[in-house]
Length: 201
View 1 (spheres, helix red, strand yellow):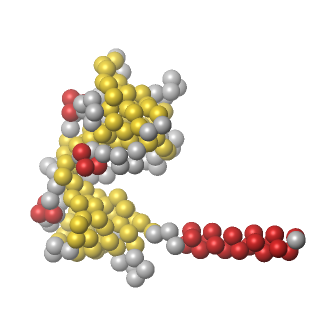
View 2: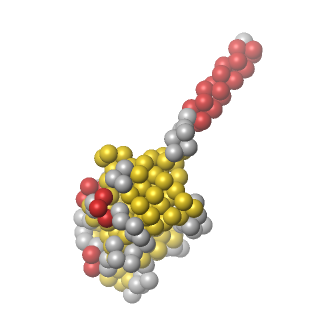
């Protein structure tokens, strides 16, 4: 019986290890466009150097532009990077007003890797109230809600549906998750491109 348990445990461990190894690897790519031929996007990245990313035929392009607190309306779907406060609220570092087609994207409240102990909340704005510390947003998501204080120094950006024509040389772009293929090439189905002087994160 003992030998069978050991064998079964080892088999499960190997199966789990195999499943873990099969998880697709993703890479974050950010930089400026050097060229785009309609399929392959050549990017100059400060962190990765010269990178080429194959865009899928249905790849989505989102323009990222500056926005203000006045653009955050009740019902808007947003993503908020923030720091937890002693009273249980979240103090926003950045607020992303997402396009309607992105509603439901990564919904919920979870840790964020931008700063130690920071959080990310994706959800719909239920209400907005002014306070002495800044605008207060109640953001609801499946299973909960968060009180978000947006101070005057918070970075606010708006995402809108863009076009591949925006992927011109010199444009600032960010690909949050480029899929690393077995042959080492990169593939992506979404690109964020800055509008004006905005550098997407």
